[in-house]
Amino acid sequence: MPGLAMLYSTQGPQPPKDESKDPIKPTEDELKAKDDAAAQLEKERKDWPLPEGWTYLTEDEMTVLAEFGKNERLPQWMRDDFAHNLESMRVTGAPKELGEMLADRKPGDMTIVEIGKFLRVMSKMANRLAEYETAKELREHGHEDAVKQAGRKESSQDGEQDKKSEQGQKKKKDGKTGDGSGGKDGADAGSPFAKKWFFGRFSTGDLIMAGIMDGFNTSEQIVVLAGTNRADVLDSALTRPGRFDRHIYIDRPTMKGRQDIFKVHLKKIVTNEDLEHLIGRLSTLTPGFSGADIANVVNESALAAARVNAQSVELIHFEQAIERVIGGLERKSLVLKPEEKRTVAYHEAGHAICGWFFEHADPLLKVSIIPRGKGALGYAQYLPAGDAYLMTVQQLMDRMAMTLGGRVSEELHFPTVTTGASDDFRKVSQMARKMVTEWGMSDKVGPLHFSEDPNQLQKPFSELTAQAIDAEVRSIVDKAYAQCRDLLSSRRTEIGLVAEELLKKEMLTRDDMVRLLGKRPFEDHQDFEKYFGGGSKSAPPPPPAEEAGSPPPEQPSPAFRKVDEAER
Image 1: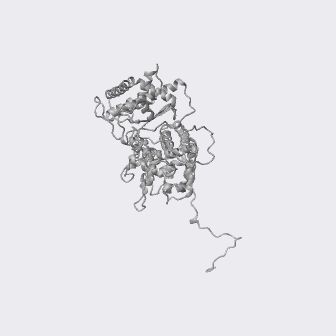
Image 2: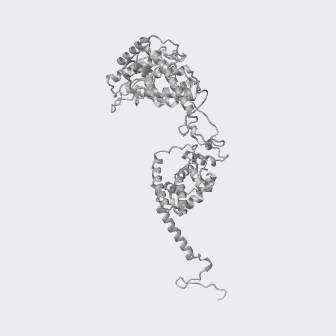
Image 3: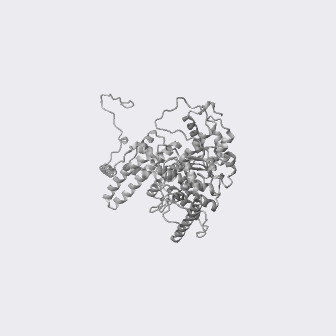
């Protein structure tokens, strides 16, 4: 009826449909193409089985991942490459932890932590994606068997790589070798394949720094600090202006620095020693120690006092701690045969005599034939002349001659020699080679510098120069050996006195050496005279043996100061 709306019952006929709103049905060709694509994807996935810990992403996760790839904090080249990678990931899959990240669905507001985690996960995928690109090229050229073999091999390698990455970050490759890290070795640097290959060359730290630091703007007021012991292997992209462009070199503390560090750590323990004299003595005893080494010394001294339930930490406990940090733990369980012990005694006596009668050798503090650490059967502690920064040729020659004293003493007093001087030879050879190749102390080679780079395949000098270097190193070592043998040949009696006393007491101090040999014929440096005054009056008693399973003291040692008692 005109002007009236027609009403329809729920049980009656339905209203007419608007044909214009119906979805367009795919044609048969489109359905066939979709089925063919699914079949091809399934076939390729069979050739590329998932490694352990990997999975296929859902369509929703792929959509979110695409949004992640548009984040402005990521490097531009990485954003440009994302679309191509997404299609490849349908075949290769992705680590499961990537799916966990996508579950948070924060594509537009990634934090620094999320960026770092995201880049770390993507770095795992770089090699597999690059191998897949290679396989596609092989397939285009008809190498189907090679494609299958590459896929299965890569899946196995990725599984092993994931296991290793859980235990620790893989060592970074140098990037300056013949393959180059600039991304232009055999591939166009602008291609997706080259970028993924280049991406895989970075360590996780490089990727995080590149992603985080490129994403900062001047309004965020964020300063990034980082520390490393191997600045020489960092990629130049990290140290260029705009990134880590301010470098602060923190060297080991000087004498004054060690004194200040000891003042801080000594507040945590109980000691009745004169603090000013104690700090000066300990600082003199520990040249080259880092702040962590000093903290370890103070902690070890308190433990040594606690083992004997001492009321306070005494000087002997500090010296035992320094010996332990330098030479390792005494191995009371290692029992040497009488002839071995005698050989060690004469070996260490040879070192001690050289240190006593060579002017530029370091002053001797104590010598022991008690085994320490992993392989040392004897131990001698010398005190360098303060914080020395320069050394002369004669100082180096005296040190090398002193280092060879153990082997020469064995030659003079026994019918055969032993393997005990192996580490001495290593030190002497290293020092002599540096004199020739780095310090310009060879007349034949001249003032040249040849650094040794283990990653360098070819030496930076000719074969003729190499022969000259070897000859000069041999000549320097021979001179040091002759210097040592001349001294010890004329001091056989003194070697015997020191060795026999060592066999009786197992450890001799500087005062024992003065009693046996007389005063050292050279002046000691100022700090030595100030804080040692000629040495300890007698050899300190050895620390108690640390037997495995021995019961601890019934009460905590008073040597440990409570936190609330420490000076703030």
